[in-house]
Length: 259
Image (cartoon, rainbow, N blue to C red; front, side, top):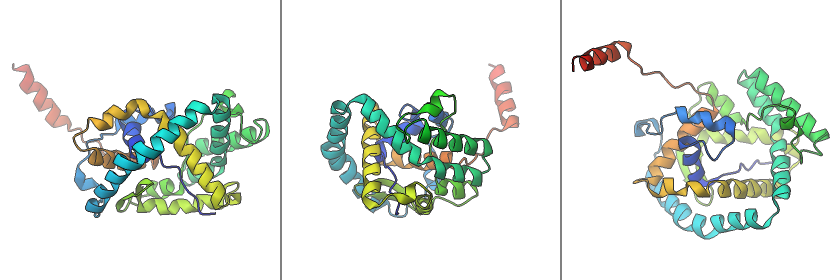
């Protein structure tokens, strides 16, 4: 199966990094990353094309299609049913996340993913009920193959704004490997599209309250681009260089004490 990843649209990328409010509690640590990264750190050779696609996505497709449909989905589908669907779909990603965490050297997280999968797949009725979380097993969120190779120094590659899809980097091409693991390997293209659509609707609706952050930005495209790249680095657990200069700080403190 060619795996189709859920895209939460550019808006969510900024919100995830800037506030940590849209993701799960485990993702709130992303606030430590500086969203105002220099443009030189982003490989955006197609910026002209990307900005045009951003306009199509953000000014037309999102407000007239995605946002209304997502709001209708959460407004009319009963919450218990939506929760069960989200649990079931998330459970499908546990085996690939387990393997990718092993590749990254995260043994404890890999064990958690393994335990979450077998517990929720059996006692949780194929993942419809999140028994594992109730049992105290942490949900570490999805880890992709692209995250694993990025952890070992493979760069994001060129940044592309895909029409009707959102931000994407060349490194994410490697995520096709995740679709080779059971149970994702059993999904055909239509099942994959259904998974992508349902996850995207749920996630888009979750960030409605954060839209003002993007609307008030002088350059929403640049904000999302920087935030998305840093979100990718966060998932790959790439360490940020500490630019703290003790000598310079001591000199500054001494200077301020004189006044």
